[in-house]
Amino acid sequence: MADSRPASPLALASLRKFLSPTILAWECWRPSPTLGSGGKNSAVGEDVEKLKHRLPLLDYLRQQNWTGRPAGRSEFVGLCPLHVETRPSFYVNARKNLFYCHGCGQGGDLIRFIQLVRHLSFRQSLAYLEQSTAPAADSAAVLAQAVAFYQQQLDHYPEALGYLHQRGLHDPTLIKELRIGYAPGASLRRHLTAQGYSFDLLRQFGLLNAQGADAFYQRIVFPLRQDEHIVNLYGRSIGAAFAHRFLPGSKGGLYAWEKVRQCSEVILVEGLFDYAVLWQAGFHNLTCSLGTHLNPDQFRQLCEGSRVVYLTFDVDANQSGQQAAQQLVHRLGAQGVTVRRVLLPEGHDPNSFFVQGGDTRQFRSLLEAAQP
Image (cartoon, rainbow, N blue to C red; front, side, top):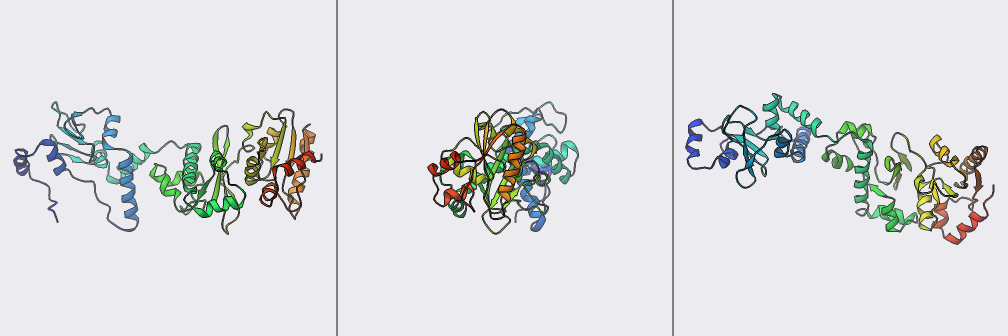
């Protein structure tokens, strides 16, 4: 094992005769304290490395208005921020992410620099850097990162693609347009914390549960947007878990309402797979209420302007879909909205209608036969 004792002043003076200043700097720097190995300490050590990778030392110094001139390959030299000097002696190696000052003899990595310049402990320095490098706590931005990650996962899980095909959704262009993804579980936390988002923030937005695990596990994921911002996610289980799940908070307005708000006729469906297969079949004057009970924003959207609304809720055995449709007919009618009820075969929703052999012509016939 190499001798880790600090070099004596006499030894350093001798080395200067043979080594360039920058080479000497990387030989003599003192590393930040280690955190041990195993268990929680290993996780902290990984977070430290991610933090230093996220904010390189040279970038941080430049943010603090430090200027340095090139002094060799990947090396820069300038005045030391740690003490007063007139001759530059502070070297930074951008490739190794290290600094060393020949004037005051201090050296190390980014965390060590924070300790010295702000007079903080190691852990206080970590907390300071975490706070200063964390992305803004914007829920739309965090959800957009999650959606992009879920989209990337979809093609890597045959069971997820198989489920989409089973539900009649096979157009890759539409899948991409709707930004449908897959949440395998036990992976989103690692991805987003590497982007700088804290555990507490991810739990606040509902992406992690109280135990710190991914909230969505083995679920097909649809992003829900309002005014071009993602406001929530819908996850459909492909396993034995409860089928439907949203993140905490508002679902927003009607799904993809901005595409149909000017249409004189609008088809309203209950679920997102209903929406997807109808869009795939060529029906684009289409929106979705994400359930049978409309929130105030959704109801207000349907009442704006003059249009005919075709209610296409599930015809299920317990009649809940049809009861909800009947109540909505009366509520919309009281606001002067013309409503038609599309009567699907018993036991079907639009998704199952197409999966079990229905086609565009047959569904158009159901629209034409729709009743007040």
